[in-house]
Image 1 (cartoon, rainbow, N blue to C red):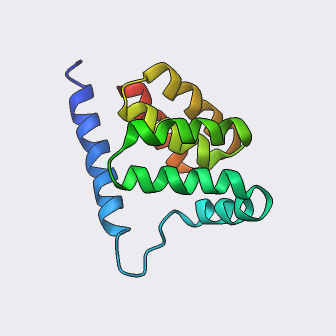
Image 2: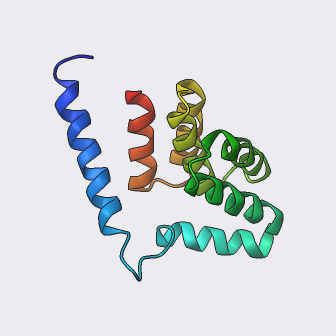
Image 3: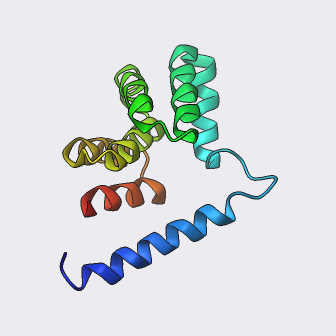
Length: 128
């Protein structure tokens, strides 16, 4: 790894950890408020896809990334313009070491979402 990249990666990881630590308060929502809004729309307009995402999130909470990934892939095919699904799929693919696919999913998230979380997921995929 290039020497200048190590401190940048460390700073990025520290920022993610601080953000995650601050978001786990007793009243913290399960997702970002924009993600919650998108999930609410999915529950109404595409309940089967919402169920896929919720099952995937449950598996992710249990550390079962390889089992969650196909569910997110199916949800992404069902709702291709969902920034939230694309980002979550990108994050899982990144963790599974599937860099090229992760970057594709992150780029899809960026086209739809343009949120800081989408950019952060893209940077993580690019840095793997």
